[in-house]
Structures are given as structure tokens and as C-alpha cells.
Image (cartoon, rainbow, N blue to C red; front, side):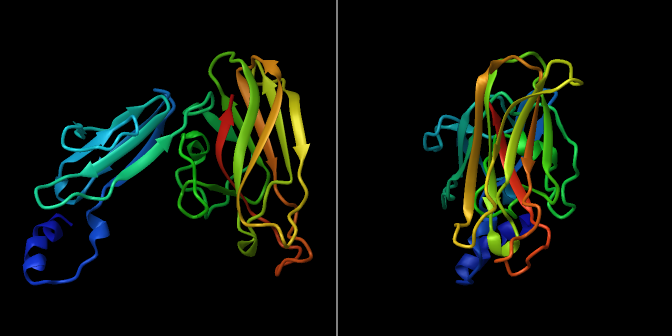
Length: 255
């Protein structure tokens, strides 16, 4: 790929057409539960200089220059851009939302669907919100209930839990039919804090991102268990009635 970058001047002189998207910033995210942080690596073909900001302002050549992975521990509006004497890239932008569950250790009682594991369980609490495309790697796919336990690592005041579900009915990707929140001080004995049931989607319901929140009186557990119920089977109106339904979940928030 670096060789391709060196050939661009030849392409330009010869008026060749080429796709410019490969010369934009490429990102890689890694959740580090030991450091309670998100590690962000940025790269570009030819190691061209990348300038960035973390406050949402527009980066330019007076901004910080990227030299090593960024360690994010708090709400951050990251923007980055490549600037050369010949050109300026489009702006890379990512908003990291941090809450009490973000970057914390967690585990699942039920396995992810093998086709939709992406970066694994940390995807649910990495501070990165998925868009309406459930295949981009920001959403995790389940055919069984999502049964997630988060270790907050110490007794922590909490009063609400929220998550988002991606719905694409034609692809058998349905909304949750229920949500439960449980808590524990020792990771052994759990008590239910709140629950809600949601109707199975109708044919006329829209695709998109469905947010769900449960609020309750303040408690101070170390462990929070969150169960999102799958649609037991696709409804009669669906093109595949009676078949299993997918549940795609992203960013779990504990406040």
C-alpha cells in the first residue's frame, strides 16, 4: 500500500482515476479493562502526518500530531485530519461516551452468535455507539437473551441502566421483548432492581435504533446484571414466521 501511495504522483500526472478513500485515516479501537481505558490507534498509507484534537474543535497543522495510540478515559470528541502540502483529507470524527460501565470487565451467560462477535463482549461497553448498520462491528448479535454482567470493580452508586437495539425486520433483526436489571455486592447473590416488557414488533413498526432505559432508586452494588430478552420467534406477519429472531445490542450505559 505504501508503494501505491508513492505512485499517486504518477497517477496524477497521467490523469488516471483512482479511489481516494484508501488514503483517509484508518482507526483501530481496543478496550483495556486493566487500565479502564480505550486505546485508539490511527494510521494512514505512507505514514503521512495526522493532526488531531480531543475537544471537538477542527484540527489543523497547529493541533497535536499523532505519534502513538491515544488512551481515552473520559468523554472525548476526537477529530483527526491528514494535512500535506498537496492536500487535506476528510475529517475523521469519533465521539466516545463514558459512563460507569465503560471499559469495565464483563461477561455473558449466553454466547454471541458466531457470525456477529466482532471485537467481542467489550463492544457493549467501549464508549462507541453504532449506527443503523448492524454489520459495522459496533453491534453484537444474539439468538438467545443477552445476559450481561458488569463488574464495576467497587461499590458504585447507580440509578439507571440503558442500552440500544438495532432493528432491521426484513433481516430478522428484532427489538428486545424485555429488559431486566439485577445487582449484587458479592457477585453471587443478585436482587432485581427493575424490569419492563415490550411488545413484539408489528409489521408497520419502523426499522432503526430503539433505546431502552430502566430507572430505579439509587443502590451501590459492585456487579450489575442486565438481561435483554430476544423475540422468541418471528411473528406470523414476517416472511419467515416461527424462525429464530436476532437481537443486536450496543452501548450499555450505567448511571
